[in-house]
Length: 103
Image 1 (spheres, rainbow, N blue to C red):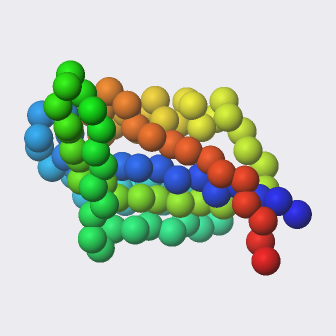
Image 2 (image 1 turned 30 degrees about the horizontal axis):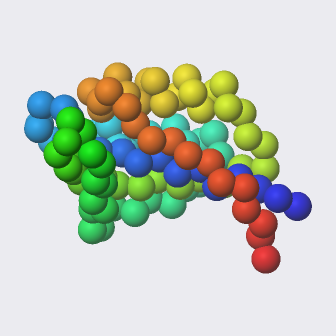
């Protein structure tokens, strides 16, 4: 039986460089745990995201939240991503899904 691993790459700072409130992460953790029965949060050592923007390299410190589900609802995830972008004051937040098989 295949499952989907969904990863949310959440920023530690908004577009103005201000730290995102811890309450935002707690709310996301609670929402996803309730909907999917749990989650994994990689928060101890922030990951670094790099991308090219206007011929220079931009970077962001991020934390990663993951959930697994047997059913993938792209419309729900697209709407949830837009909510996260508004909450975390971002132009774009990466939410990606990967089909996976439990061994």
